[in-house]
Length: 426
Ligand code: F3S
Image: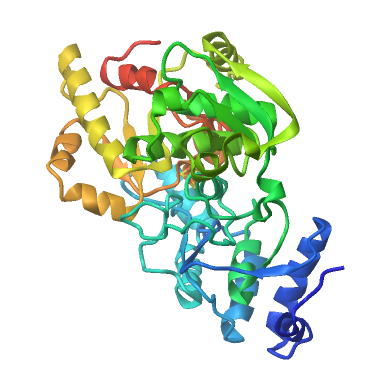
């Protein structure tokens, strides 16, 4: 049984209102399922919510939000939320637009209004990469979080050294409203130990999203301790390494269910404690060029016509960083020049946080990228893809998360670049 403090017990017993009592009871039950013996305070300035979309079918969520707002049980922290599902800049035909706006996400404005009332950080705080400097929701090492977005949870745990379980949607807001989360799993020192050693033995820097996919599929929800990646990433968490780990982590979290990884000599806990983080009976998985090739070749082909010409390309799932947008501008320009082309050959969308896009617009790169024909957007590509009409479209991406959850076809970054600038099959 869970041991509650006096204040927690009072909330549980309804002394702070019936609604808050319900929230506390839900969290206690959730914790007990996982063997938690106590509730610990949620820390940090901001929370992050996974549910950002006003899906017509989410009636019970709106009802719950209403109850919280009416009872005055607003979030104790302001919060960011996952990306919006709609953006008119992203190419869609008449029928798709009709379905998006009138059937699927018809409650978007209503839901955003609820989020604002509940404590959204600011009007445009919709992104899965809330930890980017431009967005301003970057937890500190040791912060206890109540997040649910898998790509953000794994980043916060691994790269920032915060502590967060892979919660589900709605549980995230509940933790923030009541101010406590159950103490188990990745919140505990024991739960942060690795039961897999991953040895990287590739002859070149492994593709982040492919490596993450291989590890995720092997270790599932376990914690991997990765040896040999510092050879390619260095030992400093600079912009380049963080961007790599953002994409790598999202693939581990979606192709498996990883919530935390340690990279030897690089991520904070691995730097601090080294191999002491590895459990005694940890298993070993060796990754070389052949293993990555095997993983890549084994992805199922889900297009009806495997040789169809791509109709759309999505990059930025999770959302791209400012540096990534700049680097890709250079790459696209150069590759177009080499091919003697002026504009990309496939409609291409680069997605990033609204705040990152705003910063990008201030740079000389923005007009250059626009001139190549690439579209920038704050959309969540998964929300775009998750319906039968988009599902039938031949869409390509270098996101392994998008590949996992939709019919989008995965290619490496270089292969994507070739297809959008030079055409032809890779
Ligand atoms: Fe982010 Fe949506 Fe991809 S939330 S990680 S852009 S699926």
